[in-house]
Image (cartoon, rainbow, N blue to C red; front, side, top):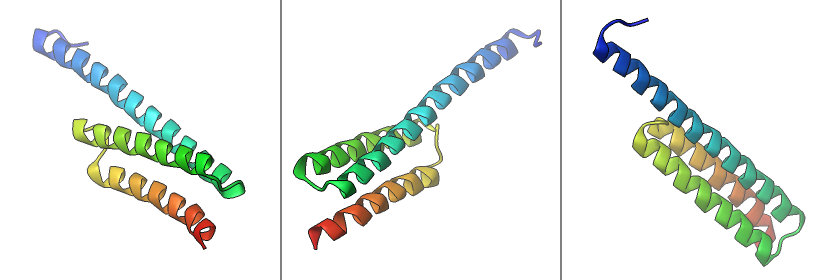
Length: 99
């Protein structure tokens, strides 16, 4: 355990940041799972409501990923890779419906 006041404060700050980072990462994982589930349901039954659900879930996930990158919880390349995965999944299920 630290004895110096500034070291004790740094420990508190590190713990606070760890919890916030964990929260962001958990939320991103949840939103990505929702996107993939929405893509599966859209592929099974392609209609406007399902497409709107997919688009909304992708927008929510993109927003959360961008916020996590902005505050430093995620590396920007990791955020870009996750956004790319979501876009690719949506494109994959929406192209056959368009043909």
